[in-house]
Image (cartoon, rainbow, N blue to C red; front, side, top):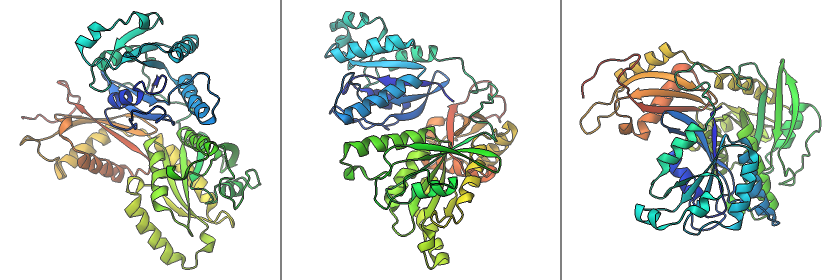
Length: 457
């Protein structure tokens, strides 16, 4: 698992803008309104050759009574607990507020490295005009930054990387064998989907007992509840989650809290079953739920429930496969299974698949085979020219698992567009028969490349 850098702070200080700047993509919603971010958002980042995960959190309010605000605070608490380095983001223009001081005191007690990002310092003139002595009084190293313009962010990340724990299983170092990633280990299996698609009924069938409350009333499950079972000599931790609806339909604060717990269960899972209803498909919503699992690097199984109610099974199966190909392209590699939780049809197949995907996600691909793949691919389908110059790949190696992460050295990584990246990933899946998430990282070719062919610009 990559080390984690958590961004924390009170509402509207620019955490999401800084998060987007660090990960190099606009993933977090940025709005000049407090409280826009509620769920934790994770993404991988790379700085000075060191890979890590960054997490954006909702605005931290130390003493909050209102339920939704408490839920957001709990998300921030969770990020603080699991982080290796904490970045306390404050608004340098407004100065320290009482909430900033209380949060700083809380972070100080945690004993983890804390860096203070003094945000919204957009120019050298503004930095010279500001008195940052008040910020230094908190006892943390202060970094004047502008998340909006990128000013000072590199220096902040230099310090964050220096405080990360020693690298294990990254870059050219041997990949470490971790208990939670080794093939044959326990499998955490979360079942997610819209309300009333039969998640609790399915899990009861897998357990062989009425462990989870199942009702025809949508929203029966409010929290993520888990139970263990054995199947073919493997241990499975099964997690039932609250139904996920479109955000515009979510008005109850408890439902918001339940949805956050469901997404947290996805983050902790090894494999996610996205369950849908054969009699009431919600393609758009199911696609969004599947995307959330894939974005978090989790293996996905697409399961269509209530198959016992379908009359023309052959025709309907063909239609649903075509629907999945059109609307679920981002997880088009995921297995698709038709089940009946009520009758038990093919439900055990979900456990077999989950075990296969769990082990596949921990696969260590051999470097010679990866390099053979990358050379063959560029010979058969070279990348488009960039300003008249060729784009060449010289060396590939695996740098991580869960998700499988492949780094490729390239003479012009900035020239490889998203379409060709997707092409590479699809070819990689075909070559190694992968049905799990894959992350592809293109890096600038170094002068001393372990393997590759000479090139001229």
